[in-house]
Image 1 (cartoon, rainbow, N blue to C red):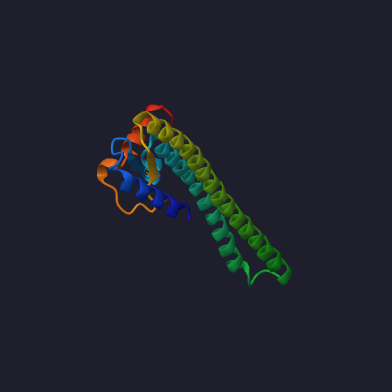
Image 2 (image 1 turned 90 degrees about the vertical axis):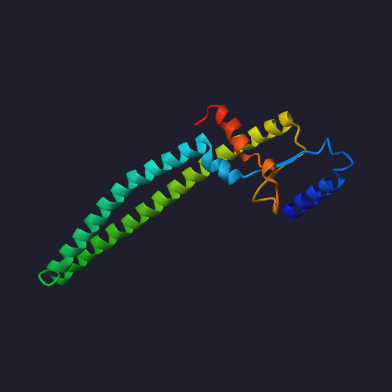
Length: 172
């Protein structure tokens, strides 16, 4: 519904453009591109990648421990009493559950960090876009993917200029 309203509004403004051609100025921004290419976006990606690398070592270590534990259990299975084998199997299953919980917690943490970074950068980008729109006297600035933008001339793409304005603020 929102997309349809924006599209209708854009069509009305474009069709009315000859009547007030000097006052209508429309552009669009690719927010995904701005998120990925801004200095803050790159920094966020680097921070998340560093966290992933840190966790990869911990995950590998725990996987090795589980493999050793399972191999040991299989080797000793015939030598152990039913009670001892059952105890070792329960220990293994508990470690496996702990490992699965650990990896899920890591995934949740990384997704939350990514969402937090994205939310913060988007809020700042939207402020930059508002200031840019006011300063450059734009009537409408659309978001490339959310507005169902079917066509736009390259000169109406403000993304690179918005990234420059955002980066000029000096945030990382």
